[in-house]
Length: 89
Image (cartoon, rainbow, N blue to C red; front, side):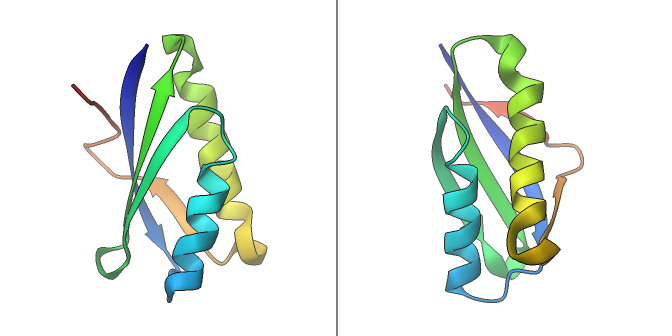
């Protein structure tokens, strides 16, 4: 098993409730173990444990889809340029 960290830029977060919604939404995806949010800088880091490396793209797409659909599209989540995935050692 490997752990990957997905780095996102997320606009539209205005309060703690926004952070909670994004955290709960991301954790709906199997394998998500941790969600770290830096609201002032519009950054979200999501740790994912992968049983199979081939799951990576599907999980990323699923997470983006969930976040972007919350609160009638209030949030806009995109992959942070230059830092899509990092492995956790």
